[in-house]
Length: 296
Length: 254
Image (cartoon, rainbow over all chains, first blue to last red):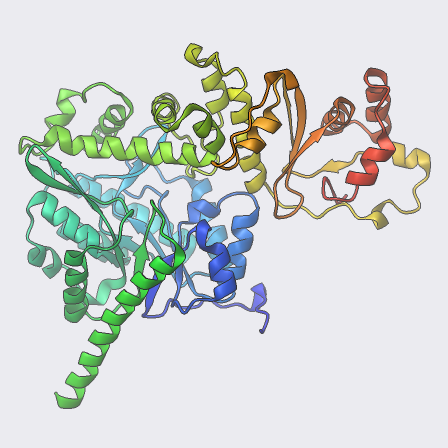
């Protein structure tokens, strides 16, 4: 196999195929089996150690696959300033691994002098929007590239919100020049948790801004006789979310699609099956599109 | 204070406490009779996600106290010491001290040292990489020049001294299917944790070896460290130590 030297390596675009979140449990399988997966996504915060095996594994895997950096620690929606050191580390990883995509969340995790590490809900006001846009600008300036912003899964709404989530989400991207990472599971979870109309939510999303799609599992809890859906990335994608995904790509077209697990990590073959399922739906839509062009 | 700042601060306060959230915070949440339960999802996620990071970091401590007790300890720790870093790679740096201060755990006096060992393992795992010292870097040195050298230890290297046989406790509890009994009479141990390349090594060393490395870490020359160590441990065998470790990645290139 041709050795790819760091100096000669270009950022490899993430292909319009199904990809998977890269987990330490699967490093060996990926390196040894070289599975037919379009790309891998990582949380850069897991590679911010000074050295050690994770960076070595990633270096090896990056030689064979395009990757995407999906950050969880920037806290774009925080009233506090961004952390320059964290931004430097992110830039260092972007320079070293040359990802095809970089993304963050419509959320915050830094509200005090400590970090929640879980993604917390925003109040959708003009003030918050300005903070988001300013922080996205800073990240894009620092990284010298566009980033994608992911819609959150949410469990509560603030009375003080001045606009629907989807309006805030799309506006933040438009004003900052960011793209959208649409998490179809999160759309489903938030809409069902709040009784929002999914069609209304999706109707705000401009096709031209979509850069990536996420799919994952969630858990279902009964609370006081009502259902709350909790986005835990710890189970297979459910049938409703698969249907919504199929509808979404039929309506909006294809984008790189990630199968995302963060807890109860499955064996690698099970992850591969879900990636194949997403790929089949993508192939189905691609075929329909070709047929439409031919017969159209 | 802006609405965003005010909301994020009171949200953080409420995430961290075990008490019911402040009425003012809940009053800001759209109420469908589930405001509290909706907030609890975030609090629960916060506790579980950071608690999971501790469970990954301290699997042997978890095995020794049991899953349920570990969760209670982790929850208390997350509340007392919420994460101060943007990454969770080294979350739990105060967990050993935290465990040591809990009176109910005094029946497991070795527990905090096991936690120290587990933390040292992960710290070594993520530490900076370095090239090992090579024989040619020491070629043609007179005995005097060699004694005057300040060796650089690998950046991952850490020392751990315990009054308990924590290395045996730690080794035996690496998997769930071992059930060996370890007597605390086996006594103290001294350990060097280091990751010369890809694998973290936990080495049991003699008191002399331990002291020698401790002195090198404090910037002593080989000669100074050897002289001081020989006085406390006349058995210390420098030749034997160097023959095994001088070029195995314990020391890095100068």
